[in-house]
Image 1 (tube, rainbow, N blue to C red):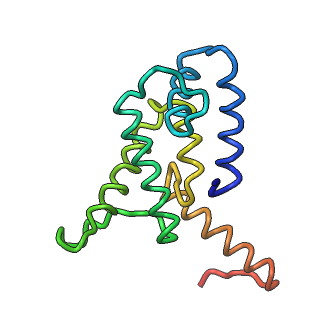
Image 2 (image 1 turned 45 degrees about the vertical axis):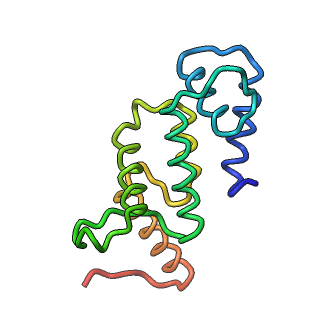
Length: 148
């Protein structure tokens, strides 16, 4: 059922929190998203449409990444007719989530971090990943990289 250990740990932690009385507004909002996604602790309260839509897009993003093994990206160099509408929609949604990070509840932020390839700062994090890879290769092979 779980795509990765981080997601399972996240759901286990929020399942434990759902058994307790709700504390602050962020926890209550997080539990709404957790309940909408998992059905754990479901009450007779209907799920708001915006929550349902966000969960659907998150699951579509996760499914796309799992199927293609790559994170959707916007490509403004391509002609409109060459761009897959689903890829564009998911890329724009992920970009929107990054821009509104501070307005997301804890569960939303942590849940996005469980999606393989999702970075809050994709350019910086991608650069860091490549730099780490270079250092690992240099360390394994035992030579230094010179400027030249």
